[in-house]
Image 1 (cartoon, rainbow, N blue to C red):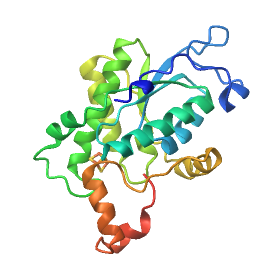
Image 2 (image 1 turned 180 degrees about the vertical axis):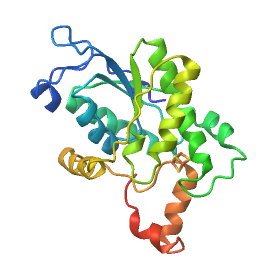
Image 3 (image 1 turned 60 degrees about the vertical axis):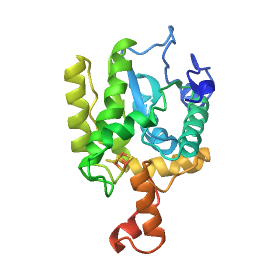
Image 4 (image 1 turned 90 degrees about the vertical axis):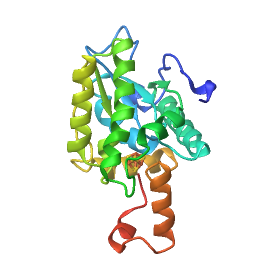
Length: 229
Ligand code: SF4
């Protein structure tokens, strides 16, 4: 893992959230009643979700995405998240890039297209690690940015989140952040902050799918719909 990205420590008071008077973790004067560890898949999704949850919780971002391939793409997304968090004045924790462990867990799952059954396992891996960190560090809740993607099922993600929360005796905050134009707003915020927007979900399977799409071999409905997380 990029060691420089392990933990940025308490955020400074700069950034739009601070300017709007939004409270942050560690702010004793104006601190929130409840803290939330937000699993962040990428900067564009984080921009939309932080905008919503930052009004309600003492937020800390958690970048844990061992699914992302190749490693250079992982570090690029991680850097974008770090930059966004600095801009917004949100503390960030980075998980390990344990891509081998992710690959082992995914082996034999019949991975093909995004949205297949293997994606539920991928969600489980990432949310379980988020729940562990949330529990170890005493967060009241954990949540994920994943549901802001129009390509991902909030029903499945929320079910996975609630299951790992039960197993680890912590609390998951279920949501569907794509609702109420959430995805559209995240695109607007991405432009505002000048964020890199990837055009595939993250894993090697979704990368291959993108290549097929580019080559015009993917099915036409998918080809027209993508261009985001
Ligand atoms: S398509 Fe996305 S959610 Fe599904 S396994 Fe790949 S990285 Fe994970």
